[in-house]
Length: 224
Image (cartoon, rainbow, N blue to C red; front, side):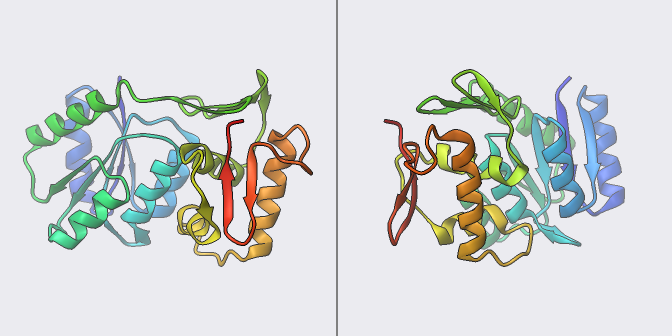
């Protein structure tokens, strides 16, 4: 049974969607807002996320960006904000589809199945040197041995491996990883997380071969 995470603060609508999708053979988990939705996504496995842009405690665009930074789970926006600016913003953060409210239930099911088909052959592992991320299981290994990372360390590694060979500035890292937390991330904080990650994935953290510092610019994951 395919599992759906529905993040929607309109309770009557969420109940209607959940009931219909359950009747179509999907397992639906409902979260009312950003905080609960993120917690559920980080602790459970979902095949697809249905997401409103405007939430009472946050922004759906930030949630979509987080989801895409952690893997390739399909995200479909369900929103009354059908203007061009919102649509473009949704696709820019990685949304797979965008359905304006109100919508026909059968159309929603068709869109979900289409997104699932597109992602059925998606890459579920990311590799750099001797470090492998199994995004389907949320497991990181080095030379076949599991490496235990915190949630933020895992997000950081996913970000680097998804952009292997590409320079990531400090600003981009902060934007992509910490938008949801609402916390200011200074250079010292980022330095701490980079050091912790290197301690766990490098043979010699003092002479990193995987996660390179590009002095004065940022960092880059390198597959040597």
